[in-house]
Image 1 (cartoon, helix red, strand yellow):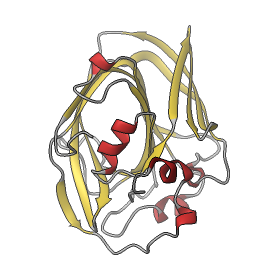
Image 2 (cartoon, helix red, strand yellow):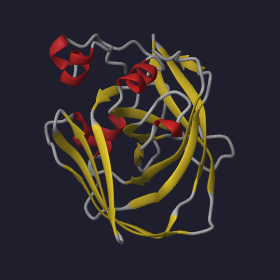
Image 3 (cartoon, one colour):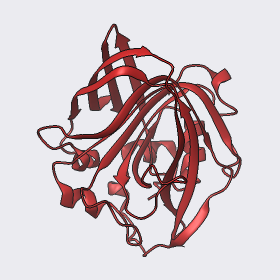
Image 4 (cartoon, helix red, strand yellow):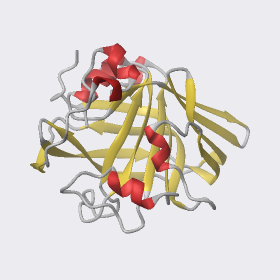
Length: 249
């Protein structure tokens, strides 16, 4: 198992990252714990990415990952350009990555992400327990000379504490880029609360075939979180119960 306090580097991942306004703003707001405040528009974000080869990481190996969450008010990332975010779901194909992330408070699930580009058409899907739960379709162009860089700030919860960390990134986005559709396919899955409004209203987004970022070496304690009720075993996702990992928050 990787030391959760150790930093990790990922280079040249294939990344689709964007945000939208939700169909049920109240359900989205209910996912944010006390001590954090969602944006007034309840913006939701999604990052789906794939690391194709173990040589692209400092210790994770090859893997795929999807994380979702709620954009926050008043806790921007360094530089003030990107809003902080609360992770609600964190789906990875790699047990090594899941163990590392759950020790840092991430709400971990086992699953797979795929991104396929055929000419101008991009299809991305996130799968859990053999079932597709998220599907996005995009129109993409070529990688140019533009660079997107900065920091993201994400919050997690562990041992009754809200944790915060800033993640530096450098990406080479394609242009043009357009989100054509986003589907949440399983009504009974907790992710369904984050489904987009109709019509689809996008906040920001890009696709990059070369996106690099780092997991920082330390987590800052933001504040002590309000106590959470213990979930009965039947409420723990099956993918976590089988993996033997704690469910996180």
